[in-house]
Length: 233
Image (cartoon, rainbow, N blue to C red; front, side):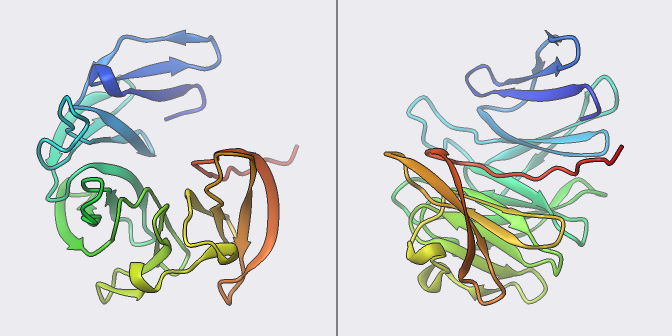
């Protein structure tokens, strides 16, 4: 959330912990919703996605978002979502927060919630995102890319609220109908992760024709990808 503080979600404790990575110390836990499983930060504000799971790890109710802000991470709002089991989120080029709801396993109930960061309220909810999607990213043209183990990568146009590539016609990176993670670099290029948990896997960079143009070796079972900018000295 700044140059020294990282926020860690404690799923089984329904809290987050600020960790000072410079000093190597942890601050006091801050209560959030039930089963926080993803955090998105913008400036000094953190959006904690609470899956609201029951003891059986199934959604007990629609998901929520706890909003924390300021240097002391004060809780300023809890946002109610229409979707179940929010698992990942990204901030679009339009400034809106796009939240991917995984839904219930086996029910193909994935959905997309859109939160206005100014009003701190859900403003849209769209269904049809298939079986248990798990990762989301936004490209420079504000297309929303969704990765799922079950089908690969779907592409959503927020302007028309329609799929450019639906879960039933998904992109299959490297010819594989599945992806365990997705990310976009500063140049707007899309990278996906091969869902292999038995051997070292790969990250694939997709070209403009949505065909893998670069393959990068990773460890076993990669599940997330992110980019950072290196400052020249």
